Length: 400
Image 1: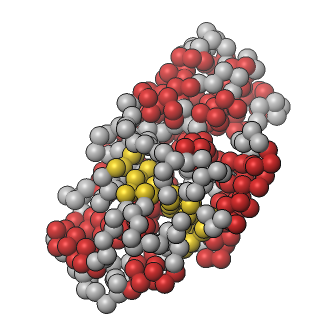
Image 2: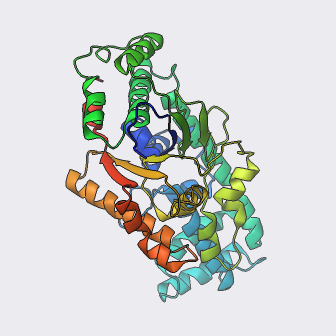
Image 3: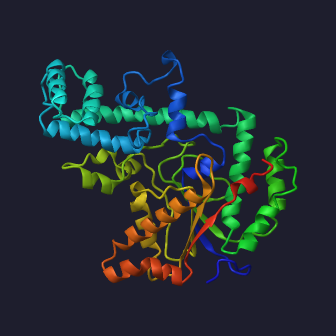
């Protein structure tokens, strides 16, 4: 099978991560969100009397890894709390002042690591007497819902047309162009270069046109008929244009049902009694985020862009690769990366190749047939079913 075939309609699964929104000009990282939240007057925000906001006020602390990563910190804090209960530092019914004095004494003697002490220090103000671990988890879950809703409001403020027309138009145009490029690009460098060149020398981006006019012009630039069937699986909460079959895995802004959560496998591997109410799977069911989205073995190409390929989401990729029977099937996998400010391009590419390698090798470890698992990466390369390509966003958006 060739990815480039004008007479053949292909079924494509496009997987988008936050890098897609970032490339489109959205300040949609957790760090951007905290910059916004903690930059507001206290009287105008909801970050008071909330354990999670107490924790994340340290989001600029660079001596602690992933301090600004909401989902990573949910895992860390819940692990810390389980430890504090298991070690009888937190005992149901004990007064908060007694617990605080004991913890301070233990901390001075280095019996309580600093990160655990930080958790306890921020948790105790919510107690008069220590509650059960389950009750504490329920309180933190309710406070997490507030954090989710604040994040939803923040994203709405930067993605809605009436927020700032100029910013919105830029985001809309970049998102449309990038989405169209991903849909049409294939393994041919000359084909992809032609897609980019069609955007050059046009004045469409030199002002803020009406959206209808922009859409018409974009369609004219990409004259070729895109007969591919496109399915989009997005880890973002934002809208994906020009595709009918889209699933926002963790909720979307239009429906106001966005979620934060922990990968289910991570919960099982890190807790004696996993708080499943904080898992992504549980939250998806809880919020009714079901769909008729079908990932089947007849998918010809999987295109992945803007995703960090972190271990937190490995279970999603395992499910996708299982659905297409990646080892025995014919599905191709195309990973895309882009240059961005703050890091050398060569290092970005090197790190991304490492991420792809780790993902494929980790997936191979799930095989019952260990020989197949070990040679999966080699098999995909030999059959030309695994490629890594750069999306030249600077060239795509040259006139934006």
